[in-house]
Image (spheres, one colour):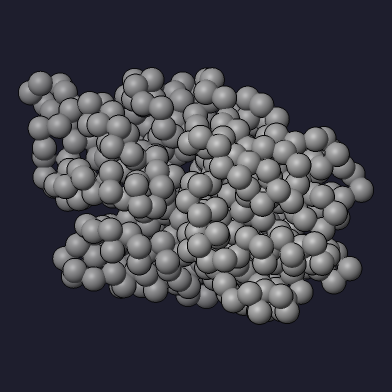
Length: 252
Length: 202
């Protein structure tokens, strides 16, 4: 049986991992290679690197990070942040990324999804979607630019469109839940996973081990992503996986 | 020196990085002379079967690979590289493969499961005398929409994905891995090491 995936996300700024990282025995707390290795030892199934400076700087220092990590850590690597062109994608794949995550550019230029899927294969094209409930209409809408710009795209309709265009996987963040540590937006993921036939990674809201079990048991997401709870050492990936497995979910 | 066959496949660098990490010298090449003088061949692969076979053909590598294997050299095909070891694939019509292991490549049935299979799946060992027997019950990382159908005598291990998907196949010194050992953590590295230490230098 295919295992469900637990995926830590690392924010990378000029080759260094940002946010407080609180691992025991790390000599350099900002070094992406050391952090990736620590996550590997905890049992991470995949790593997501988010280049938080790329968009403003029009360059991709993260390629060096990906190159360095892929020489030491042998698991799937997804890279996102500031990807606008097929050349950006090519450079990241050559550096060692297995998948790229496209967010704002997929809204601005949806053809990029289809072109990337045709050239590099659907399996390496992840579309990231940030979703927030509109207070007036109650609709779930898509936001871009790190959640700062609203669009008029309805989330599930947009998800279907990007899949039709060739997205092989969706990384969907609930901005309503992000940072609350109150659990994933399970109802929304249940609707979303019923509407699309590609793997969906849930993101936003993880605070305790039960939250991971709940999103796997009550929706068809295939992975769950978290950043801060792992960075700050509030949760250890191994303890999350042990608990989720004890609830009857297949974990590696 | 182990030759990693360079025909424009996407995951070539990551395969080479895994061997680098193990301290095993490899060369990325499409030069028939280098391939001929190598101790073993690695055939990586990501993408579509026909495009990959066309690229191999265009680079003049099909005959070289067949001759080198006929001379007894080990060959490891990874992911699409494993699928290319068989007689043919049904991906977008019918395309001939290298014909080094009897069998064909067909689509994963479109049932309740998502296709491609993408993620970590648990290996079921069928041949306990294989040099790769330590793969039993281990999880390895898969990304694929097609799978091999072959005689059980060639199947070392499978994973369950609606059907029994051959994960490791062996026919004499020709080996195929449907998953990505270069992306399967310590387990994958160990399998590559087993190939080098127990198959190549046997």
